Image (tube, rainbow, N blue to C red; front, side, top):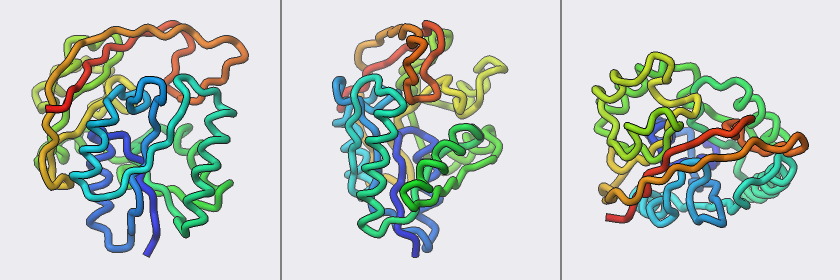
Length: 238
């Protein structure tokens, strides 16, 4: 049996990937691992409150491990912190790290290279599957999710629960699972949860991020190379 960590974002792709992993008797998931913006006390990129993340982990029944990061870590700083974290897991006998990535080759290559440095291997349960097929499977399994963050142009869907009708209404250049960073979600109901995570909608906020400086190698692949805006809907514990 493979001892694993599961890289948990709190969103729909993580939820579906975890569903498949929990059905695999060869995988023993020891921790849900989530990167946290320490200054905001929220999930990195998604902007979801840690309190809701903790409720997810409690409902799933797997211990949560928070990796606390500064608000905009550079690549070197991020790599140092994550390498230390992976080495700590490796010392516990954990050999594999699971991700919900679907088709971003550069990101997968980056993850695999960093894991290899720590003597670990990546597992990608959703890799190269059709994203329309994946979102339909998500619905069919009884999962439900709400959109917590979108690119500026998708303001109309932030704070909405995802339905088949909403997916069909998206512009043609928006991936059905938002795999290119078009939107991020919070999964609150489904077969991996012992009970539904109740939430209510809070304030909707627009944030614009300045272009990084020439020598600023900020770590996240979705970090803009020019000023770009995101809409966030604050999700409050229900």
